[in-house]
Amino acid sequence: MRRLQSIFFVLLLAYSGYPSGRAFARVDSDVDRELSQIQQLIQNGHNVDALGRVRQALVHFPSEPNLHNFLGVIEAQGSNYLAAEASFRRAIEFGPRLIPVYFNLGRLYQENAAKDPQALSKAVGIYKALLSWQSGNAEARYECARLVCLQGKFEDALGHVSRLPAADQKVPHVVIISLTAYAGSGRRELAKQTALRLLSNRSFTEADLLPFLSLLSKHGQSSVVVSLLQQLDQRSTLSSDGLRELGLLYENNAQLPEAKKALERSVQGSKPSSSLLLDLARVSHKQKDPQAALGYLAHARDLNSQDPQIHYLFGAICAELDLSEDAYGAFKRAAELDGQNADYNLAAGAVALQRRAASEGISYLTKYRKQRPKDSRGQLALGAAYYQAGQLDDAQQALRLACGSPETASSAHYYLGRVALQTDDFEVAARELEAALTANPKNLDAAAELALVQLRTKNYHLAEQTLARILIQDPDHYKANLNLVNLYQRTRDGRTEEQERRFEQVKQRRSDREQSLLRRVEFIK
Image (cartoon, helix red, strand yellow):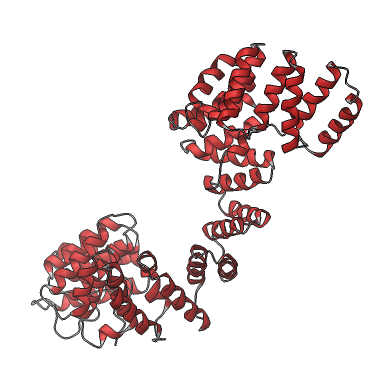
């Protein structure tokens, strides 16, 4: 049978040399000649000349449906959607039995679905209008079945399929509609039987499958889709797009090595797109290979430097690798490109804090708090930025708000303790730091600050106990080792020299391990 889903060509002319059985009554040799010449111009790509001829002809023959159809073709090829729609509808009005115009208008709607939310429904309507007076038109019936299925109207789809000729119902691109409709309507056994029938039919193509891939996966047919794509791959007929879909399905099934291999083959098979490179970066990140992820993101950034998401993800990987300067540059660029994205502002502000750039951090984090006023992370980050900038009153206000959330309470109390230490209010500092440890006993930075309070209030024995507990858990804790040096110096302890050497070793091996907000922000979810 002729493949149903190819509607002539893309916007084939309704007039094609006037086959027998013309769609309207009056025969006029002048009209015939004009239409033939216009058609030739369009087919040869001379649309400007054709447009002039059509408009001139319409002055003399305003009710000629083929002229309106030609005008619709020209407008459609020029991406003038509304004008093309109006012309095709006028062609149907003047020639309601001119069948190809229905398909031209249906195809126009389908190809403009991205710009017109109602386009697919309009396409269904135009095919139904044709079926209302030519119910046996298999192509219109197929298009209805396909479109209503894609819209999730599975019972309607099955109804249209049942009215196709028996032989047509067995071809793969119709069987896929039946499979999708059975799965979507919960008919599991029928879906299983249909899937087996489809898997045993090796004549299906990628074009049959891809439009229904997401619906099939959504309704429990992922394994069937993978098997179908694998069959196509074995036949060496899987395109770059098909390989990408196979890779994404592998990823969803946690088959990461297979996913990466399929996606890499997709890149090799075509000019890589930034979205495909993002897929590869994501899979590499899941495989714990951040360097490969950075490479793919760098390539994607070269291809599309104006996409803020690429810069953001690049910054996120850099943040994980402690490449704070690279992370900040990437997050800052993302925020410049899309300042309305709250995640970008939070990320830029968090990395600014790590860089000790408090004023920049305040700018980004103030925006974030306005965008997500109920997110305690924003209050915590802004409070930390104010603290770093020496704006202690503002810091306290933001940090107290962050104390109300279990997620940020420990860190907020920790910073409030540090604020109190700035003003030598040791009583408040101790209370806040103890609250930080109550909220999170593993907050070793808060414990180290509490030891400092004990040290400054000359409670040396208690300070030594606190520091000992920290160093058991983390022998290389920077602040705890520093405070122990201070304690031994103050108490003239004989272990002072040994601890000073120990602290120098800690400084050489690692930087200050005070918890930074950067480490507490989950950039990639």
